[in-house]
Length: 116
Image (cartoon, rainbow, N blue to C red):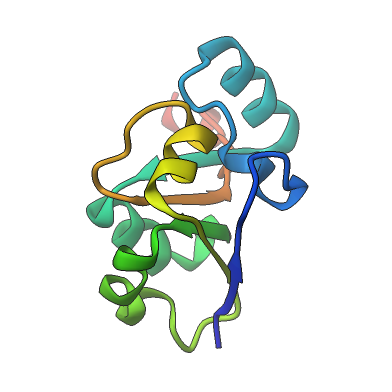
């Protein structure tokens, strides 16, 4: 079962994967160092959550969107962070109308040698 954790502050270290998505230099450095990528919206979340090779780390969503994604997360061993819309905006650094972001392990680059 998905573990739901309410978030009350941007400073909560558990949501580091989602902080400052609007800051490209920070995102590139963070994502390459931590081997993570972050996707926004239901279509991306469905794709990421349906691919076991991607290794979902966590989901961050609003209370209203939590019910909408129940079929994506319930029954799975993952963490769902829930924050009010204003706090979600502060966390990611921009207005997030879809109210949903997902963090997953960045897949390894394929070996190009077999294609040459």
